[in-house]
Image (cartoon, rainbow, N blue to C red):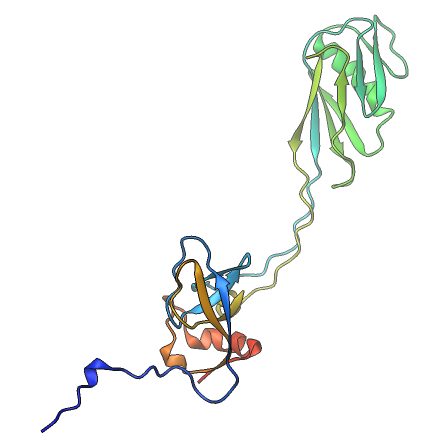
Length: 234
């Protein structure tokens, strides 16, 4: 009597139906291993696994944040010193500063006087003074580049960004786990990744039970997104 040894060969029961099958070869993200028949997503143009991502709540608009730049007077100023701010030259005088002039004295005294002169010329910024510093705050977030400062004497003054401009953040609607998990979905690995590459089915009809899924990822989560790609799970 002969016995059929079913343990030596298991049919590869994955492809279903007659829907046209197409494959692409993709580069795999560094450090990532993609198993055969695993769903594949694209992240920054590279193939990656599809992990489970829980549902997310809606997010409202976030207001823009205006940039703030701080000019620091580093040392006492003497008559004849100059500081150029945004192309305007401000000249230090012994006292009685007018127009584009500022008074000599300690760094704190000079900064307070210079603030008054600068404020008359700046249109994009609200100008304020504290101690030896002058702050430039955008009146409209995003409008007004960081002022340029050229001290007449090296080390007299410098400017730095205190608060970076942050644009309005667009709102995000609530998303289901299916939407989050399937984001970036691209296809199904035809073979395990090797040498930084993976062949991916990008169209076709396949048996869902054969998918190699990450923890908590189900075929039901991915099925609608796959259908939009021309990949059909049975």
